[in-house]
Length: 423
Image 1 (spheres, rainbow, N blue to C red):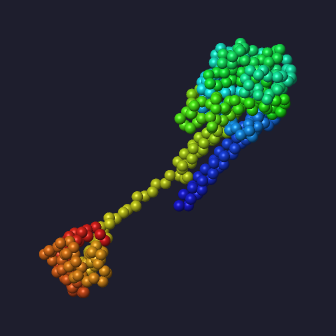
Image 2: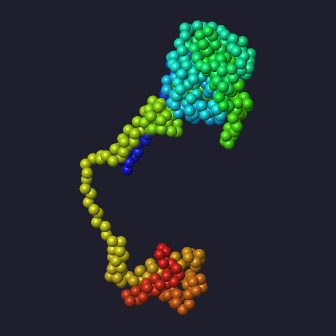
Image 3: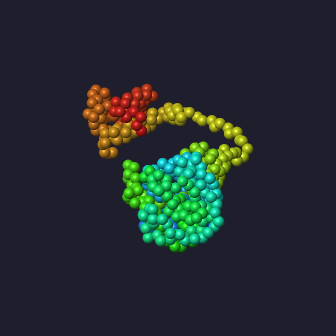
């Protein structure tokens, strides 16, 4: 018993330590993700290059804003605007681009800030593949946007940019047929706009426009609020998907997954467990590995020996009938048959009174008459048996043959009164 109590204490201590480790690992993983590097354009980052100011600004404007910590293929009708700021730590998968294009055509909007490096157009990219990024001398400047899309440039007189790249593509005069320049200089495009299905794409060549520092310059904040309003307006909202998700519940999502926050859900990044495991946060991977080691430790500890093997002798058990036989032989030698009948008869009366629900003070003769009426017993001599047993219990000596006869009649009466097995 002492060993079991000690083993239980050890097991509870191990479980408690493992639980403490899991909570600590997850807590510090969350803290580590939110404490991003100073140069990461994250909504968690309050440094000048972060975008936390825009996140808080949209919240103060009354918009539902969240941080997206999963690939783009989880976007649904509940999200109206995706804000994606380069550079990113995780590569964008082709499957994500296809899912994002389908989401845009159904009514979603993308605000995409490109930061470089320079790269040519990519025909394999079905969404942004017709835009090439070219290097250009950094030139901080303040420019007035073209009033092509009134909903985006309303009350916006100038935008402050510090671009080190430019965007080049085949421009169109109709946003539904290609990109139109909202902001450009002699080096190339700085802000392009395009309609795609029911949604819209806004590609900017300067991430400083949305940074914690750049959002305060010129009318940058007004332009970004206009983008949010145009993206979540009823005209751009898709129909309800049957789950109650419509324009009234659409949110703005800041992409944090490609900044290294969160991990793939569902099918994973490539549908393989290994890639899904590698994309999980470090804290979760540590929990899995330590959980496996903890399980093996419990398995070993529950099956190991705590001492040398001992052979236990098999105890010699005696049959339960030995007691009955011994008592019968003792009573027989003592010529105490009346004691045996008294014991059997007393138990019979007790069980019979309990079965008939009769008071304890009911006489044996009255119990016999009640039993005859209850169990429809006629000519079975129950009253005569009862009377004879009363005489024996009062001290009359009986022979061995009468002892056997009375014992058999009592046993038969128990069966007729349905008392077999009671006692």
